[in-house]
Image (cartoon, rainbow, N blue to C red):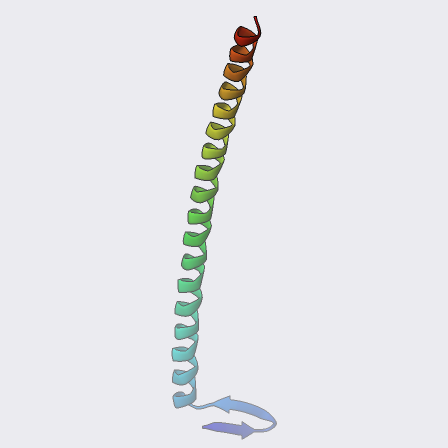
Length: 78
């Protein structure tokens, strides 16, 4: 119950308990969301690193194939 005394608002014990429980719940929700975001960021970083590694490998294979084709072409022409 809110009590107004000389222009000041005082909160009763029930209201304080509700506010404390609500703040605890909000804090738990925020903590859960923060951990979830951190996990998503980790997954994204892992996925990005994996894709970068695959891209480098494909670029290397492309270069090797291109070089090999150039040699085959030179051999065929001579």
